Length: 148
Image (cartoon, rainbow, N blue to C red):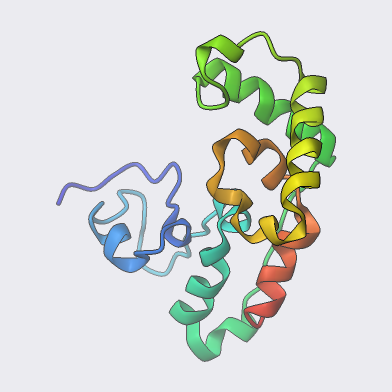
């Protein structure tokens, strides 16, 4: 396997964990005695990242220091909304004229219909990835529940 550039290692973002990561081969910038930090936002977003990290480190997990940089949830949602429209993952083309306000209203309608039981599955729905990635308290609870 050819070494790769290590822009985002995303080791813990994938349910396959180590098996997926090893497909990429060695990081081209790793030197003996150095530490790699995985700064991917997906570590907070994906529900299986916390458990995967805890399993990978085992007893050493209690010694890890987790640092999370957060921005205001509404700013985060607005940025994801703009990104989703630009990259075509948010809505089908006929819905391209929706505003952020429309998007929030749509989410609240779905929330009223589905209720809090929808929360654990919200990450699977790209339409509301904007909201899911901004639920910091809920996401951090996953990490605390995993033993961090």
